[in-house]
Image 1: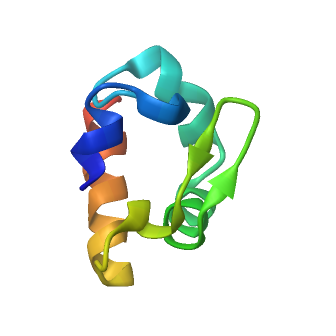
Image 2: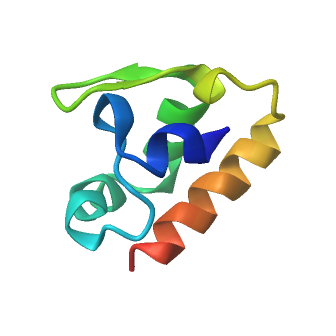
Image 3: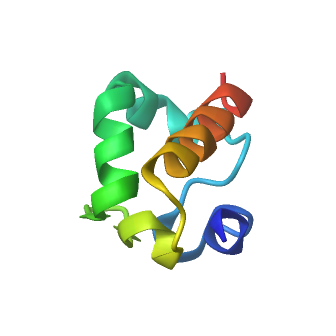
Length: 73
């Protein structure tokens, strides 16, 4: 599900492995990234639907966030 937007950069989603685009988001800290990914978020760059529109558990979403941020470091 994540790859649908984060693979192509749809709706402002930072692409997997794009260090420049992820940098400011990573600086916000894991807790903020988890909250935005789980609850959804609308910012200047685009929209993150709650859980990306998936039925994943909170722990699965956190694991996906960890995976994507690690790929951008």
